[in-house]
Image (cartoon, helix red, strand yellow):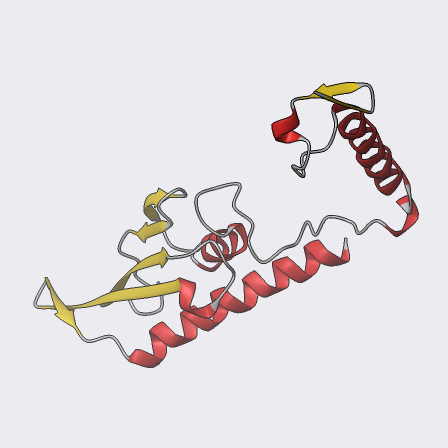
Length: 164
């Protein structure tokens, strides 16, 4: 037996690289002290939490895209909303200036990040012919314009959250 730092080791461990128990305690105290010093220093320089991060997920999807979608579709009656799944479905809406045409919109938010590819808008259009509603094509520019409106609103909401 060899006695090192008041700890007896068997001769078979005399040449091992294992530290003595006393040095492990000292090392642990030093690491703990450094950790305390590191966390206590520079409180003025500590970065603030980014409350307006592009990924805000207090609901199941990006909150900025969700709020912007609801705002953009606020003039239409809502049929279904699912904030966890990120789906908004409107009921048929007819513009009072053009009662012979109606539109139904579905917005899907596909991601938790504020990105253009995290948004999908689908629209259905019907026209009245002889008292019956008949499906009609929707111009691609209409869907694209609605996506642009929602994305712009979402970016504005994020900017407003950043500025305070």
